[in-house]
Image (cartoon, rainbow, N blue to C red; front, side, top):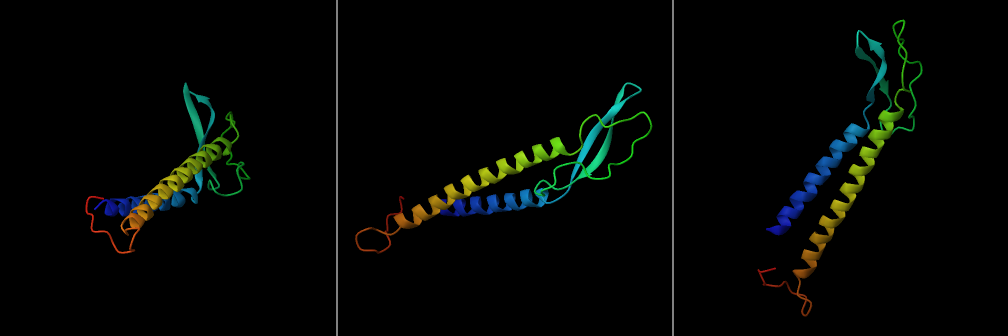
Length: 126
């Protein structure tokens, strides 16, 4: 019964990582501040490359802004940094969790065989 939960855990983790990979290969949208108009901060959406692409700078050419507005930060830099950090954290977590679950599954399989005669153990309490 416990090994069933371990297998379900592996399936859930693999599914989660498929979702993370799908997100990581899609372009990012960075909402770059462009100034204050009527006491409200304005932003310009800029489409950036995906987190796993090698390009991390602003696309060329940038969307043109209305007169009196200017990009207050460099588009895509912070968005890529944050997205890549999230992707790294998700990848490390998934690798550690899958390693642990894999170790538990193989450890349980090895314990099921008694060391003396190589026959399966009939001890249900394990």
